[in-house]
Image 1 (tube, rainbow, N blue to C red):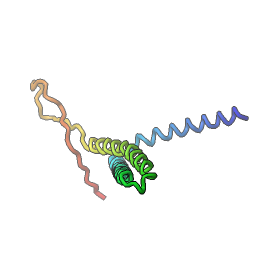
Image 2 (image 1 turned 180 degrees about the vertical axis):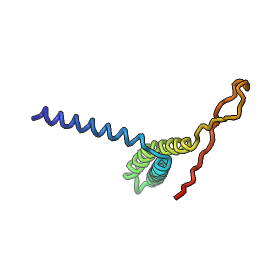
Image 3 (image 1 turned 30 degrees about the horizontal axis):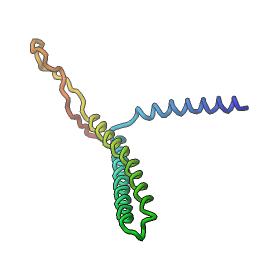
Image 4 (image 1 turned 90 degrees about the vertical axis):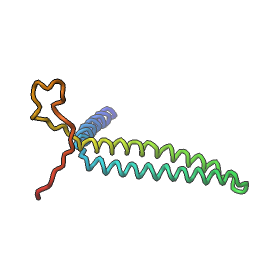
Length: 132
C-alpha cells in the first residue's frame, strides 16, 4: 500500500514538473511585464510597510509607556522588509528580460565582403502592427 502511494506521488510530481517546464518557456514579453509589475508592487509594499513598522517600533521603544510591544514591531518590520526585497529585485530582473525581448538582430545586406571585421547584423527594435 505504501509503495503504491509513493509511486503515485512520484509519477504525479514528474508530470507536474514536465507541465511546469513547458509553461515557463511560453512567457511572452507582455506576461513578463505584467509579472514584473506585480512583483515590484508587492516588493515595494512589503519594504515600505516594513520600514513604517520598524520606525513605529523605534518610536514605541523610545516611549516608556509602550515599551513592551516595541521589539515585536521592530523585528516584524525588519523581517517584512527583508522578505519584500527579493520580490523587488526579481521584478526588476523580469522587467529587464522583457525589455531585452524587444531587440532582435537584423542582418545588414549591403556590406561588401572585403569590408573586414564589420558585424553582419545589428541589434534593432522591432514593432509589429496588427492588421485585424
